[in-house]
Length: 299
Image (cartoon, rainbow, N blue to C red; front, side, top):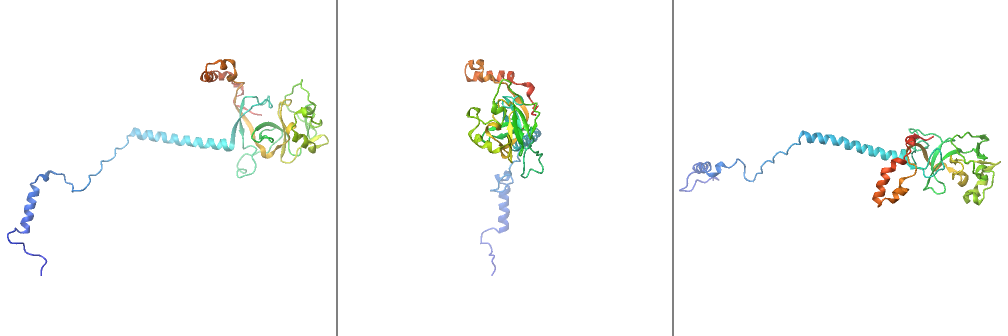
């Protein structure tokens, strides 16, 4: 038996029905509809392309941003590992370094060991070098002094003159106050210190153990340091040796120097209000700058 049955009686054949249906579609109102299948979505309109000007602007600021980021990264590396800025707060190194000098400290020069030892320009510490170090009594503070004695050196002072290993040192950088006399300070360590000399108690107790034949013997991994302003310097004569591990670098450049500050002047204090005082300070700050010291190398 066939799956196809003949059309029912009274109905037109299938071919005639299809022709009629086609005629209805061709002549109906839908003949003017767009040629899109029902349920289909229209293609999205193409996104507007950026203009040449926008492209140039984008290409212009991206390299600038990359360069800025690179500069920031390099600056952070330099500040963290290579150099650091310090301000000189006291006159113990006059006239080499003055109060108000702002110096850059080379943290690489005296480096030792580690992975950088083969590629960085390290140098041994020598007599006469100026060093920045953590104060042995309070490591949170930083001091700046000049190295006088190396490990194993025999150091003494006679009438303010420095002798190392029996040789008098030529020190054109040292300054003295001719009107100031202090037996312990000027004849170290030959004179036993007293409470009035300002020697810290731990050093007053420990110092005799390092004295041999009237000379102070510098122990291993330690340094004897003094300020250039010999009559006004808290240094190794008063608190002891500088451990090697405390030394952080050497000052090499004075990048700014300010003699005093307009903040404390009567004119600044008389300014009406904090903002006025601050503006006065900024306007007159240039008058206090020591222009002849800016960008000077430290020796």
